[in-house]
Image 1 (tube, helix red, strand yellow):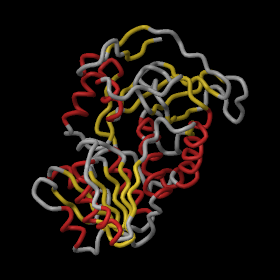
Image 2: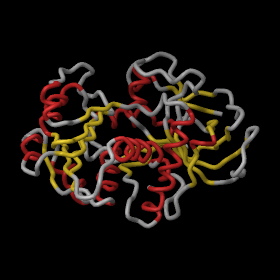
Image 3: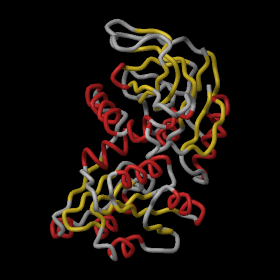
Length: 322
């Protein structure tokens, strides 16, 4: 088969479309013939040499894909060759085939085509596990989403609205904010021109904040929290070291959490995927929540897709069709 390899870390040109050996599904795994993979910022970090796959995982980038089951490993039941699926991966999505632990498989939702389904596993698992399982967003609460026009952001807006929350988003252009508004966001904040802290303070503070920035926003995020608010950090685009004012946090009886999904044990990822299938898939199949795709490219065009990702001019997901 062919896959995107990274012989040496570097810029987008470090991504090389090359012939490699076929993966073999192990115990409890299935072999998926990839229809499409999605591009995530974690893939960019891996390409740059900053985010190695977990031990034993595929060395190729790609944290989610869609496709058809081409083979079953030992001990697999409940799935059959030919089933159309999408999958959460620890790596290997940028390839023609990938071996997937059975607990990380999802059926393609009714009403979603096979290629577009590649846009769903990572964003749904990330938003559901952080906003709902960790931060317990409830109806009528206020959710602040940084990077509202990203793949994560567009899913967080829709799931927040689906449970009856008020959603505030930050983004850096009028076009991106307009897209967030079309998805249901209630308050649109241009972070280049406005102060998101003041915007949410006018609403009584944010009950939940989903943050992809990290250190640069840490202190201001705490300022923006409501009493009993919950901040969850899932990205480091603004650095890795910040100062946390514990007195300010205690005064609000607030909580700060940080998570990653890729390196979690298989059983934890399987539990997240099962919960997504139970709670999020019905919303997608009813049309309440939809995948947002900026464009579809091909796997050999992965370098150009990474350039687009790093330009931050896209809205929603970038897909690579196999």
